[in-house]
Amino acid sequence: MARMFWIATLLVGLASTADAVKASAAHPLESLAVTASSLGQKALDDPACFALLESLTTEIGQRLAGTEAHKRAVAWAEAKLKAGGFENVHSEPFTLPAWIRGAESAEIVGPVPQHLAITALGGSVATDASGIEAEIALFRTYAELLAAPPGSLAGKIAVVTQRMVRTQDGSGYGAANPIRRSGPSEAARRGAVAYLLRSLGTDSHRLPHTGALNYNDGTSRIPAAALANPDADQLERLAALGSVRVRLLLTPTVHENAPSWNVVGEVKGAERPDEIVLIGGHLDSWDLGTGATDDGAGIAIAFGAARLIAGLPKRPSRTIRLVLFGAEEMDFSGAAYAKAHEGEFGKIVVAGEADFGARTVYSVQLPLGAADSDFGLTLGRIIAPLGANLDRRPALSSGEDIRELQKAGVPVVSVHQDGLDYFDAHHTADDTLDKIDPKQLDQAVAVWSVFTYLAAATDVDFRSLTANAK
Image (cartoon, rainbow, N blue to C red; front, side, top):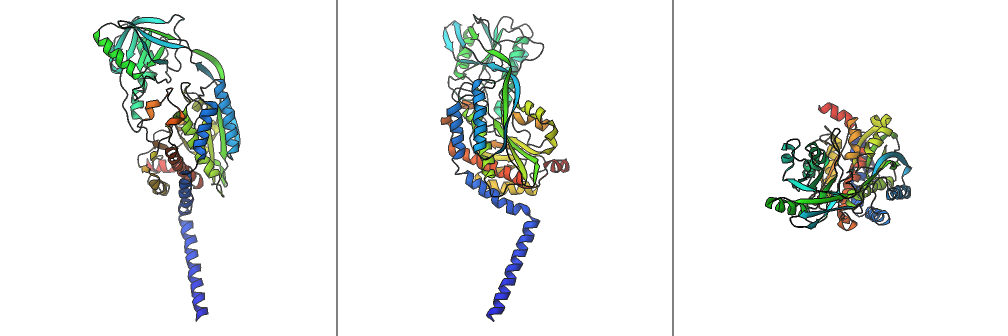
């Protein structure tokens, strides 16, 4: 009887094992989900990411593209990737006109002389050696500037004091971005000799926010700078009382054909190494702070996710390519990368850039059609305990450095982090390591780890899912 019971038990066990094998074969995501979930949990207590960020901001500091500091950052990045177990570590060179900040100052000359806290916009031309002194024409909204007729600002310094709206998803920045990007050319088109704007920031500190501008062809290039928000308020109050004169001095220079690099490292795929899941952040930063949130945190997040996957006993099927872009702030590295990899667009399964600070991830958006797939449902189930959800709306973008790849048809992922206070320190001297909460940084790494692993370990075809959804 005991022998018969043992045989029956064995048969039941074999049947259960066979059923499990069949279930695993029928639902391969289930076994991969276990690994993905464990990666996410491991990331929540991984000190390596914050240590990397601490090293970058301490040993290198600011990393303005085209400078010696950025060159040191490239060497630092190569060494860190090699030590982290990445393969095919290399730097891909390109050139750019490197804009270098010089001396900058502004003051109210009358009616009440006082210093103004300003910083030049990236790409701004210089004033002459003695600066510019002129009456201001103040506009409380950008629309008011655009409504001003041609020639109406002749000989004046145009000032736009429109406030940026604080939002969790950063949409307030996107809405205000034309004020900085296009404002100088619009002011010049109306005859202005210089341009000042309220900083694109949500703080109330006397720390102005820099950022790039785009001069339009066919208009004069005039000096442009951002005012600290309290100083913009001060100009508003004074302008309401009467005429205000301001003196502005900016002395930036441009070094043509300066060298820069995109730094690359890979976790080679086991079965389909030619298929690529591309993730990254940008290595360059503005020169006012140490670039901790923008984008040292993004570098740490992408590095941390790929490094954890590289440490698994079994590599995923596809290659994970980590790209640390070299000149995002001045809009050069994404185009340089796309041009160098034109032949690979069809091999890139999905791409994403971490470039929104170090706060927690609250949602993930996938390419069109993927949210309701087995991949999307599995991802949503795994990231829920991490405090994030799957947003069923399709991803519309994934960082400036990914834009050219997206235009070429590469699917993108949008990983949304809490940005409610991101623009308090963004592009200012206050962008420093003390703004980073290691636990929140780890949560972002956890969500990126789960997505990256599942995309690399499965055979999900985002292009097909998108095509079927249209």
